[in-house]
Length: 331
Image (tube, rainbow, N blue to C red; front, side, top):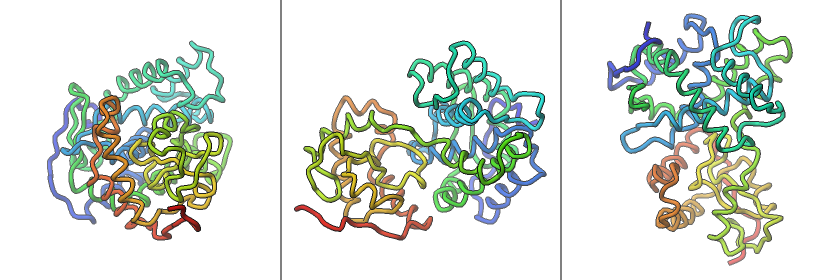
């Protein structure tokens, strides 16, 4: 009955890779009681927030369930997908979202990040409250009480350091596995869509539709120049780019975003820029964290140059080895 727990403590501090693989294999197997998509979405949410933890590997529920609510909204409302293994019933979080949609007459075309900030907060708060009941304890139990400590009263989890290292090193594979098994589940209990079609929806369910809000902050640091090639660019041709590719980080942190010209952004695409640009970004971020108005941001509060260097290193370990440089640079 671990899913009913309100507080959970790690029973083992150190695990070997093969032990952690065994835990994830169990979660993805038929042996784990997956009557809803909760476990898959929680894993996706944790992977999304690996670099939003603090030095103690703690992650507040507000951050965790912001990702959870966003993923669920886009699956349930935007894609109209059932999230429970019974076609005539709805998962509890699914009911919450459908009620919010009906209450405010929200069209299904609106993805989560297009909702007002106030409405997003309302949804996250309701989802968080519901997920305290049986979501946090479920994966905790499936991993033999080893993946994290959690406290529903304090609304915080603390990742096991060996799980954290494992998820960093195998982040890309774990994302693929989670997305695939989520798509398989959805295919069984939804009339429309095959695994391939559903997998495309699942893989992009966390992607933000617009990065304009970040442009307003970042534009003041570049004097109208591309971060990579140095070419002068106008606002209508500027792109906000994930320095570490979005397909790996699956999140939008200010410290990982830069302004690039369309040529560099399209050329770089899903590649990793050469390490010389990492040093430039670290220097840029020193300016960011020195500004009082930005220090209040959650992504800035958990940032460190060490974390960015680790993210770069682990992206290479995860297969991002096709290093990119602009064809032409303006000095």
